[in-house]
Image (tube, rainbow, N blue to C red):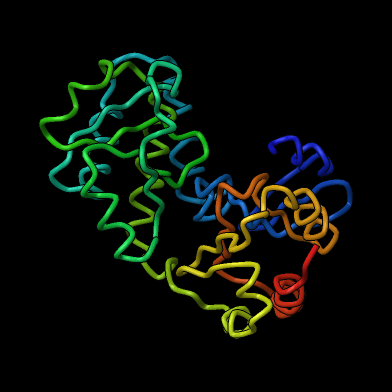
Length: 251
């Protein structure tokens, strides 16, 4: 399914929840699976990366950034332990772990946090791989490795910025909310907070048509139905009208 991303023009820049390339603008409804849920080019994260880079802290060596990142995770997940890796290659069967997503409905998050271990989607596309465990379960996973302080510092900043903006999790798009009162929309999609999940069992079979149809309308869907659509924090009136017309449409 990731091959669908190759049907897009080359993206030359990104800002907020919009992508620009090939003379076109796309509203990003994938948001890197949730890693860009606070938007592209977040000002606080960009400043943090510049400050860390100016100190030359690129190499994966012991650093104070590691502790700052852990402290941010402790704010997000109290009474948990953490395994932090540069990437997922050293973690066996990581895809089978439950996934925690920011701003999901409370009942969903409660079920995830009761799991012995889960992997969070953190609000930074270059965030390290993290497994969140119960205190007595962390030894089930390989020892943590060193990660570039540049990435750790930026990921910590992104977590703190997310914690400071709980309003990001509220549905503000009144027209989209009204669209979900239509039976045809409900046949296609299921709305949970700011997340939209496919409701049709044959979504995978038809996803290429969905993806291309939404792209023609100026919206980028996730590259596969296994990841939810994430509504932006805001849309222009024209964008909201266009999206409200696309959602009930069948392909």
